[in-house]
Image 1: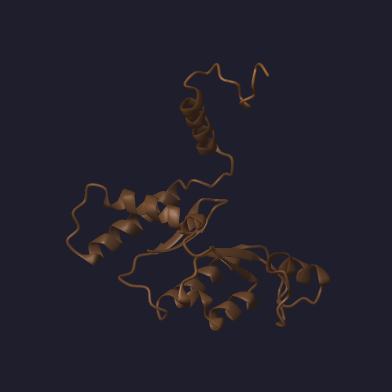
Image 2: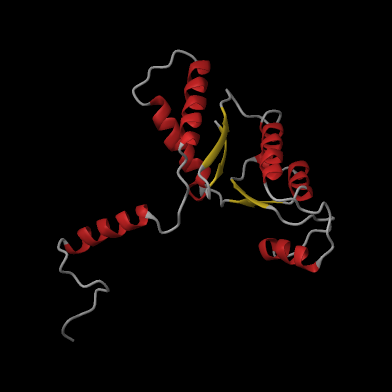
Length: 186
């Protein structure tokens, strides 16, 4: 499942595939990113404005020796070989897209991975597929259902509150514990 996830809106762009070699992934990704960029406010194609370079330098630590447009989108993805190709990275930079790579063994930092697990679980729960095409259909239908009522990602949202309550129960077992674990008597 090729997936682009926009945390602010919860929208998912996805395509079911039987495999994702470099002849499949980059063209799909470029097409989807062009659509995403078209939905964003207009930006100048090139800009030598120092603030533009400062935006890139903030994320990269330096500014590449390329003519850079205004930074329009930050793309978080993993370290697949196709994602690291100079052709793809130059294409992203030319379109104002900054790729940020998750650390090796850090796929949990890529929110699209979490959304994929959720979508796959929903699509395949209790099912007994007979073919790859059937799985792809179920996945794409599940994505369409998700997008009908997407769930935006919110930092410190309800999940964090649930985790804190669970931690409180594990540590104290009672609501009468001290919030900051201070000693009553010294």
